[in-house]
View 1: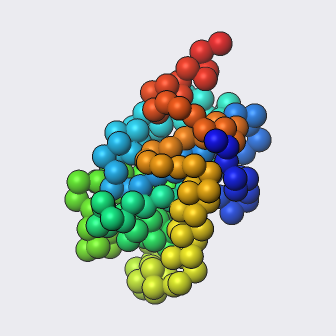
View 2: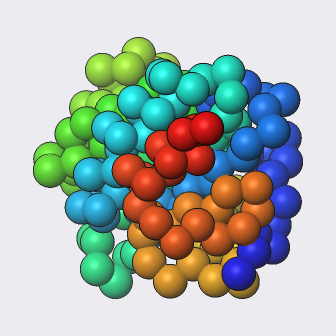
Length: 168
């Protein structure tokens, strides 16, 4: 399977924007496997930040994870204040505590303008953005989280195996 929605300027990106190696993760903020992958990905990005462009896309499995959609919307709302990655990291680092109320605590903790955040999380466009990520994942063959794509091709391994891409 391959990535059907190409990486674009609307994606959330870390690392080297011009890197030849592009890793896309479809993730769910409440998924325990995504939670386990998170520190591995942080380590990978720290070590290979110049060699990789890392993209995160929302894939909330709402049937299984009650607050996955709320968390994705909270991260998107933080993005409107240029703090997507701060919220992304805060959610994964506090995954076991995530609920609707705790998301507000995290927003405050990372220094968001709370009035703007409270207003932004109500915006339909954020819901649409998360849904577009999700639908893009579905048509690209995502069938669980985390799902990784390397240079637009489905990667059949976990976060740890991504390190093998750099073993040259």
